[in-house]
Image (cartoon, rainbow, N blue to C red; front, side, top):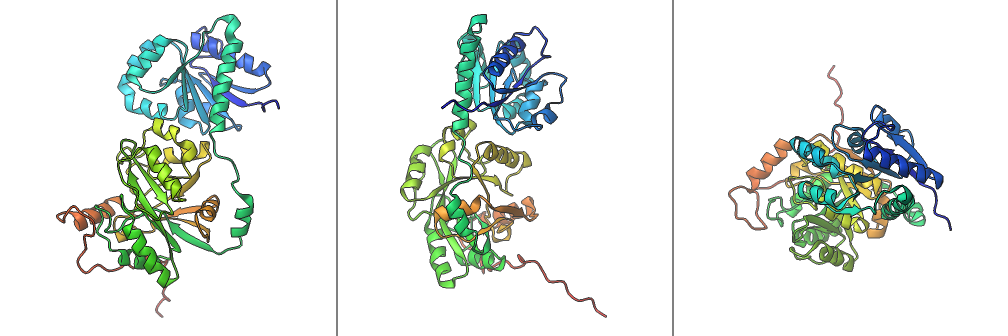
Amino acid sequence: MTPEPLSIAQVFPVRRAGRNPAARFARAVSDEFERRGHEVLRVSTGDPVKRLLKSRSLDVVHVHDPFAPSAPSAALRHSLSLNVATFHAPQERVLSTQVARPLVEIFFGRIDARTVTSAETARLLERFFPGSYELLLGEAENEWGRIADELEAIYRRLLARRHPEGGNSELRERISQRPLIEVDLHMHTDHSGDCATPVDVLLQTARDRGLGAIAITDHNEVSGALEARKIAEELGDIKVIVAEEVKTAEQGEVIGLFLEEKIPKGLTMAETIAEIRRQGGLVYVPHPFDRFHSVPDYEHLLDMVEEIDLLEVFNPRVALTAFNEEAARFAGKYRIVPAAGSDSHVAQGLGSVRQRIHDFDGPAEFLEAMRDADITRKHKNLIYVQTLKLLQTTGRPKAPKRRVPDAKPVRGGRPRRERRARS
């Protein structure tokens, strides 16, 4: 079968008629792709980049020398598609860009495949912006077809890594008849070393705030979640998903949902994911772009993209809104099911973000329910909850099971009824 034609944006670093080598390259491959029946959107300096990229559905946005300020760097800022970058001979641009390095690194972090037209360019970029750079095989006039072959293979390789659309339609239809419940997917108890909230207090607070299910994700421990599930089964009005936020050896944290056994910390990410799968669990990546947390870097995130079941696109404890926005952007372009959690370390923060989903039984139904989730959030002052966390944990032994004196559930989570005005 002939592969379906692609919709590709080619973004020039100068005007399209310029004699710049990068512009010449972009023109030539654009012509070749159009000859093959692909739809090509040409964007260059002076064009309204944001409006053009949002004017149609694009499979790939291909930028050339995306150093700021330029049309390619603007394209990375606004693109919601898979991004491919080609670097040509940017010696001067690389050196001048060091002044704006933090901003450039954010935009480079949105590139899903990096290519270069010379080995010298690759060495220079690896020195200043470490990453994997794929060398394209020359750019002589009679080789544009071969270069287009290489680029098309890269495009299709990236597209193949996206998660399937739709999920299990039969399962979704079945659970769509069930009532809606609200769920918070990220929280801690005093079984975590940095939390002092007792299990019973957490459960009572969750019930008071109208949550129908919670995932208890203690750091490197499942004992608190197992205890909570046992209590919840007796109560009968709230579900507890046994989970664990596992610290891997060098690739940040990952959450396993629907576990039964503790996963030891210090394994590689691949080993940790294999253990989650062995237990029949789901892979949930928390606060993936928060540089103040222990998170996988972009390269590691790309390595594991097929294995991610859910990606946390909102976490109220993330200090900068841009980190949550990056997570939502990544989940969207790879079609990963988005999720959210309060990451509560104190009862006062519980339920500050939640998703409304159809009731579920087990991981398969839960994942399908999450495809149609409505994520909502309440304003909760980050400084306030962080201060409470410090007050409750500072000065106590660095070990699990620390207790807050006379701990009580936190009230006030449900909407208050309006009082009748006095006559």
